[in-house]
Image (cartoon, helix red, strand yellow):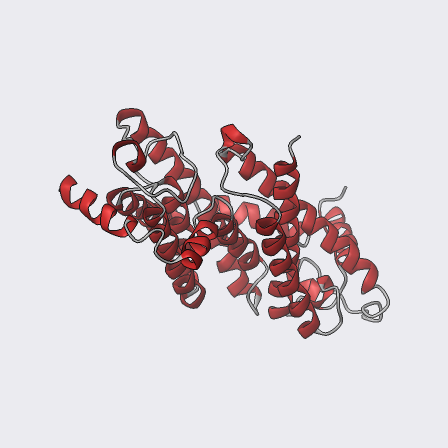
Length: 140
Length: 193
């Protein structure tokens, strides 16, 4: 695997981490924020995006044909999907741990609220409750 | 018509080398990664945006339409390229090149179709973000001509394909409503929609 592959993957990963933090903070999904205060989550998101772009473009020539070490369209889309999924996974894991104490005192849970449940719960809590709701509903 | 196309191209490309800093900025804008990845990230961001569940659901359906539109645009361009292959400007003309030499067909501009597809799919549900993306798509298109890799008509055709596909797919979304609805229901089980 060429370094361009890895560089692009890291670029997408950091970019996606930043975008998710900014979007989640703007829509009040505090359960997946790395910081308690939305302002800091937005700041962190912005720093991640700027770092991703700055590092990617300052660390080498990125105008390369795929024949000479660049990425073709298929590689680009697959690595993009991989980078975004990795960023989402890391976001959900880290935010579940960092918000565990802060968001553990809520007792009322509306089932099947989807992303909205992340306004009050960590992803881990929301997912486990949501899955048990669906398992009960489907009599599994 | 082709004469006008070439004249406009040569006039825009003739500015290369006059302002060093501008050329350096264009080299970043024109790259295969910054704007296309940025536009894809706009869709990722839109997925998590929206203050209410109802608004978010509209955004998420737009993201699904956007992804589908990009696929269909690529398909249309692949079909066109099977019947018509236009060589790049740098193959025929004396061009100042700020980009690598692509080997695929110049007409229609595939990356331009992609950015316009995404911009319009988002513009339909969120005018504010949509206008910003359209402005960036225009800048990206200009940069592709300026850097010597596309003729203006390639850009125009790519943009029209992108806009057309995004609008049509949004219009016929009702017909394929079960598909995005199913995707969203499944994602909601895992608290991801």
